[in-house]
Amino acid sequence: MIATLEPPAVTPTPATTPGAHPDKLRQTVSASRLNTWLSCRLKFYFRYVLGLKKPKTAALYVGHTVHGVLKLWNKARWRRQTVTIDDLKTQFDTLWQADQVEEKIKWDEGEEADEKATAWSLLDLYLKQSPVPPNELPEAVEVSLEADLSAHGLPRLIGIVDLDRAGGRIVDYKTVGQTPNPEKAVHTNEVQMTSYSVLYREATGKTESGRDLHHLVKTKTPKLIITEQGPMTEPQRVRLFRQLESYVEGVGRQDFVPSPGLQCSACQYMNECRRWS
Ligand code: SF4
Image (cartoon, rainbow, N blue to C red; front, side, top):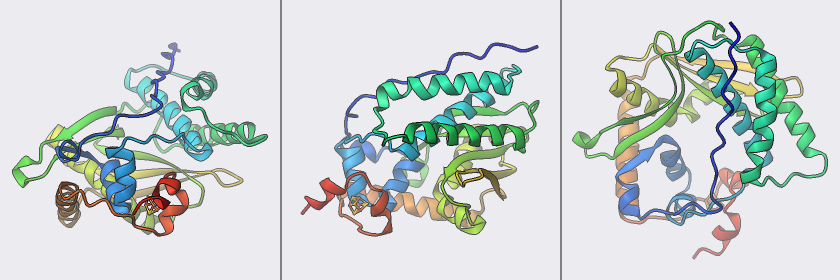
């Protein structure tokens, strides 16, 4: 049976997101918030304490839309609906237009058509080559999870996992510009994937069977690269908890200093940063 997909949900995004007092930020933490803290404390301050919101770049918008369509595909299987690539193309076109109402992307001349074609080519490739069988029933899709770590003197860990596959395999989607090196990909995504393992174990009482990064690579000819790793190890858990300890202490001290480095080339707070003293 071919069921009709639900229309994609478009979440209104306020022009500015209210910031939060550091004391509140110490009570809960997500992997993305911790990653921002670890990469640059001043960037963390601009984004989470002041709540300065910046429009998505073209590259981020492609990733956002690709992610939105994959979420629809996974949710359809979760609900035992059958969807075709044509159905998903229609949803892709809708999402591409609808989310721009709030996101207000500043495209260069001719850029939008190119980026849109790239985004669909990535999805088309993924839907045809995905290691996830079209009839596989997920354990969960985009479910909000949390873990109370107060027994360790740590904040509540929160997160939304892209996909928990049948058999407890955690999947996270990445839209990237270059072919990833597997070892580096595991390293650079360690905070996120370890957090997901902690959340999964807390929610299910089980150990995940593995964790995969599905990289959709925006090369001239799109590529799908899967980076597989096993369940979280004890050293990975300890590293995450030590990073969380550092977060709690540093945010408590309001230790919001800049960390100039390679990451600045992709930072949207450069102007604000240059005025900091
Ligand atoms: S420009 Fe660099 S140092 Fe400044 S806030 Fe951004 S990441 Fe931090």
